[in-house]
Length: 481
Length: 125
Image (cartoon, rainbow over all chains, first blue to last red):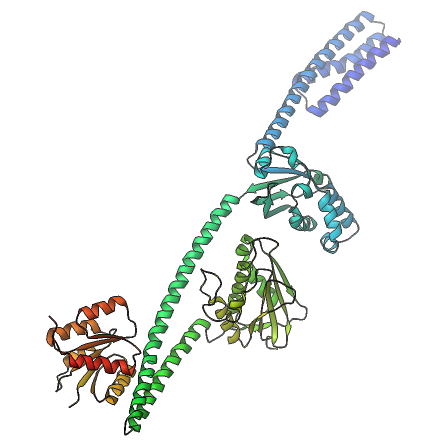
């Protein structure tokens, strides 16, 4: 067999191998299959004819094989070109979808976080616990996250002129992200499939937008390098919500005012008459006694009438107090953690709207509280509302809730770093109608005090040396053994 | 013979207190828990002055004043209330009440008003 023959046979085999590989990869159109079959026949036929000395026939088969190879190559090129066009189209659609989507999309590189999680899990450590105990690592991980791409909606949302202003370290582009990074790490450490949170996104110009932030969290190490974060601007929706809440509050306040008006009118009506009778009786008694010959019988009768009337007035006051504070308490053994948590949950919207951070501490070894849950909630919510309203416009807004053991059972402290209590109102703080707010009725603390005292507890305002703001404390008895 | 003052008030404590006060001043007092009870009374001698509350079940003090004016235009009426208002005062005085008093009222004021009312038994047009 000549070298030329071996070369020709090798060429056939090479073409055959390439075509087979291509078809394995792309599927097998019918025409290509036919060409392949011809090629498959040509190579052994060529060899056989050469071996038998039939050179002309071998050349004919060779030419047929080369023809088939060219046809096959043409078919491959055409198919590849079509496939390439489809890939380009898909990429263009993807790019358009990303770039022109009405939703803000951020592409972020969290590779270092992925590595840290992988290393911690590989070492058998609990990532959440490790992160909680190592704030420096958390800070370093936060600094490692990079924004690698954003779309047009993001540029618009952030109010920047160009996309490049938003590319770089997350820490630099959105400094406030440090406050939510713990939540992201927590979700990743738990293995959550998605992250979803409401967040205040600070723009470079200092303004802020209320946003709903969502992301499908990575399930494998590679995905950490391209974390897609969707951000929905819900500022207008929240503003509508806030208007609705304000309207609800106005209605509630008007209703409360009406109730107080009716209650006050009722009390005045009930109390004025016996007071008038008592005063008139006393005046009558004085006149009976002031006569030249005092009439003791009439004087005594008038005084007795006055005393009876005064007691009637006292009864009215007692009845009203019972109406407000409910004489019969439905007390239960209350867990401080659950009780404080429930109050914070009720206040969640107001705290969130006021950008207030709440820190809750329940001291170890705390007994449960024997109290009416509704009244305790009323007290806590009232104190939390006061704390939110006392916040300064600038700076960090903090509310601390703390429950600790106390000689009288349990002591709950509700502190804030707000503007504090004006000195002129401090001495009358718990009296009805004492208020610093023009729209307030000043009944909240008076009601709180009544609620606490009906349990046998105390409510007072505590001075914490060197600390601004206000701290209210109240005690409740410990639960029965 | 001392003048008789009719006290019309649904609150017994007020009735008794005013009665004691007026009697300590030397007047005779006749007590009525409602306007209807007063109008139905035919005791003799008839009262010389009426001291009436405003807010009462059934006929109120201002309606009683109008009825008294229709029946006995010469009988002076003093209106006394625990819940005064400008409108109520204007209405009572326009309808001929001699005085409009707020509860609680001092003994001196009561004495003075009754003396004036008894001294001016004029009839309104």
